[in-house]
Length: 222
Image (cartoon, rainbow, N blue to C red; front, top):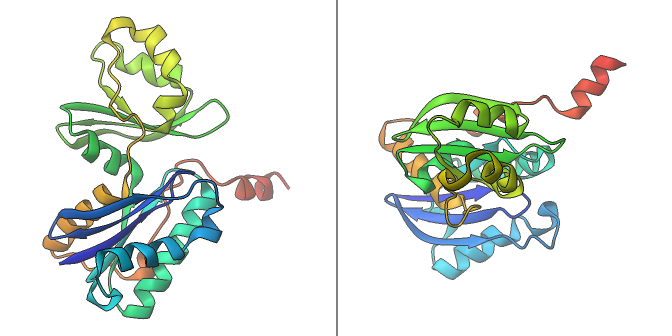
């Protein structure tokens, strides 16, 4: 089976074609252009380079967050359009789950930049989430990890690696690359969900914001 996957949870982003759980091709997005301008052209280019017709794709996968609110909306809308047009399932995949899959270490801390001096963070052990997604200052998260330091990954870990190093010293472990591409892992996780019998419809997608969007907070204050 074939899954076309898209990640727009960060400014970099990526897209991938996954066949039978194996990444056929994965490409980084052009971060020099706005996401709305580069999609769905990058997906079309990936399909063309792999020689696979869009009609041959069995399902789609998209990163649902946490991450850039604008990026999430653009990515989800793009993949919803493709899934609806082709009548295929659309899998929503957490960026934190995808990071943990890429790192594949016994204990993984996944950090995505949440701006405002905070990170979206989750903790995984042997591929299983043991601390659910939260949004906090990096020092607060590190306070819970200092006794058993994990492997850190994600753009949040890249931005705050000096704080990680200052706190953990020679026990610091950062994944290489610290900010990996995620679309391939998202496609792989979607494949596993497909094999488990799931067939989510495009309208079932729900973004994983963790923090409420600024627009909602502004409406509440008003």
